[in-house]
Length: 310
Image (cartoon, rainbow, N blue to C red; front, side):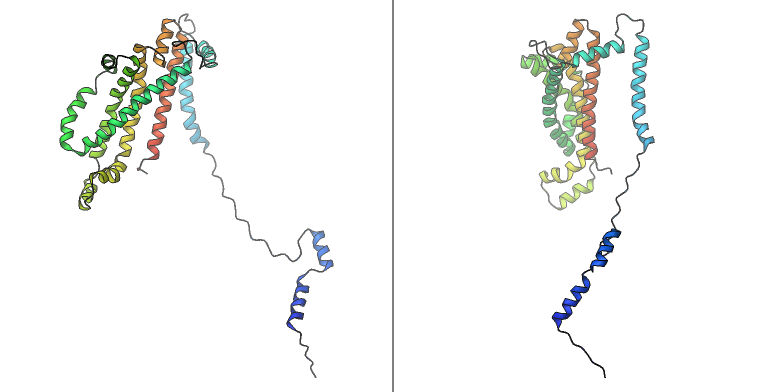
């Protein structure tokens, strides 16, 4: 005789819950062993991405050559000035630079200001002249590259005026503006406009003809052709012209300020020469080079950012 025992659903659920709960003995044993009782196995942790090792050889090849070049320059300078009484040594120039840059923004009069104010004044003139040159030169380059008749008409003028020395434009600016500061800005404008015109025009002329044929088929307006087709293709050429122009602008401002006077790094160099302070002249040469290099590297970084070669 077989007997069967039937339980209600509530009793079965209570029994399952009781079996799921750990007994006191099992809980104490699990606590002693440091393992949680009846816990499911933890999911495997995702491995952290491995950091690529630093290529010390490539880093050394990038850092050591410039450092070696600067060290060589300072070493040759030190050897040539060991017995010189008129030309300062690297150590004397460094001491003068420490004193000079300890207070670069002093003001003792309209023409006696720290080197920091002189650099900022020069950068302001460069920004104004260079900005106006970009506003005029880049659109003109698009027009010359786009329209053959206009290119044939203006190209001889560009070829004629581009080789003119920057200082030859300064008297024209003084005659027209009757002031030194606008004359210096005019000189920067007229000398930095040519690279932007030429490079932008060459970039437009090298746009594949298939792109323009597609624009004709789609019946695009001239504005859409410039903004949708020409501008993306010409951007690397245009940025190259901008980079060359900013170098020219920074080069011109030093020479222009030597002649116009006022506040600026060029005037500061000439004033230090009048005071026979050769140490400050050498410091100014390094400052001019560093600022020009920083401007060029910044524009090169922008050009690489918008380059489509990769």
